[in-house]
Image (cartoon, rainbow, N blue to C red; front, side, top):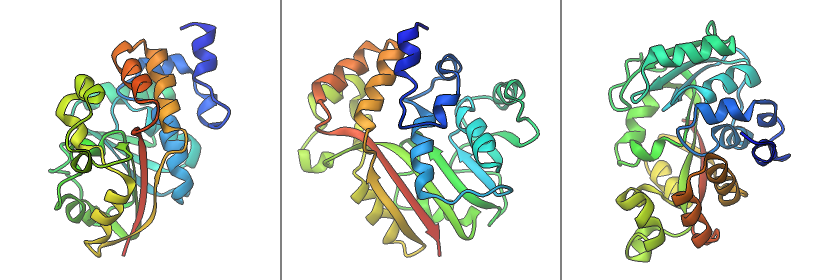
Length: 246
């Protein structure tokens, strides 16, 4: 990684994330800038030391390390694509293995007791499993009353249904998967209509498009970089959504 890459990946608007080695983050890469997303999302959550937090779709573990170090919480890191042994090695290297439990679990068959978490967070993963009408009612069972749910997920500023199809510059890179990239307003309605949670925030990340472009350039992902440049921030970004269980 070059000096330019290091500067590119330490924007001043994310002071907590800037303390982490960009080379370490790139080595754990499974999607755009997870710590930037989490640091921004955390503004809409109240994470306190000692809370038990489920990091759902935790990937190789960068977000779980961040949660432990920055907020003093106890984390269960659950992912289907990454073996628990691989994640444990990351946690041991980061010195947080005593505060994180790694679990390999599929998002629709979570091996946890009801009301066992104070918060659930999901960074750049919820779009793969959380858009079905029945998923929030399933997931909220694992939250204690008053527990918090927060997600950061790729988003479009207009629904694909409204556009009539996935725009060509997006379809060429991600294909049909973009139909799961919803607006913050879509997420707000999808959750509130269940009457199981109160949505406390649903917003497009202010610098989502720019952050995504920074990350894709640092990763050398030419296809995603072209997609973002052609989009110019017109449609693409990230939705940050937070809620409390009633």
